[in-house]
Picture 1 (cartoon, rainbow, N blue to C red):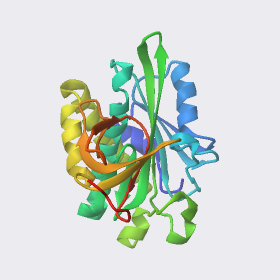
Picture 2: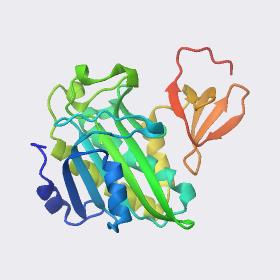
Picture 3: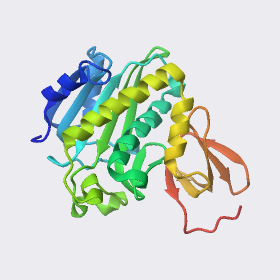
Length: 268
């Protein structure tokens, strides 16, 4: 990763969480898988895995995250929070808030969050987050939080079959330092992680809602077997999506793919 100096990143972070130790790899199957292996072997909270290329980058629901070398940021943080397994999805939303703040520094108000794990620029996906948890009995042993950010991909590099996507380079019209994005992301992640541990989910939820741009919009929530349509009403106190459906019933949805549904007639 010619524009990435892991030793310098470690020095600048000075053992912070995250950033206590940087594991840099030229190539890996998945930074999340590698981080899980480190965590099982006893890695400390705040250790970070960064790769120049992933051969089997992972997205939600078994999807592939396109991970070419020399262009993007593929980064996973190991956490050991003392939280209930039931609230672990809130960590994904917290990571989204941190990533959106970083991208907003380059693209301003064109950045928005889409539940549960995407960061968009002008409605196109620029960042995805994948959180995986392991338990020890009934307690959380560790959580790994993977973040992939499209930084220097050109528009021709994207596979349209995965939906509309973009990169910082496309949006700002120049190449962007991956090192700078990584440093800002880890510092922002650390800030929001401390807020989450000290103050709970409420401030994360408030910032997520302010950054989402989804409130009051018609959406579809697609799961394996169903499609639910309605109006996005926000997040509940646990981070579930609140949907006012076509029968005017409020539903709490804990998983699914959200599509902004401007092209169907809503019968509310």
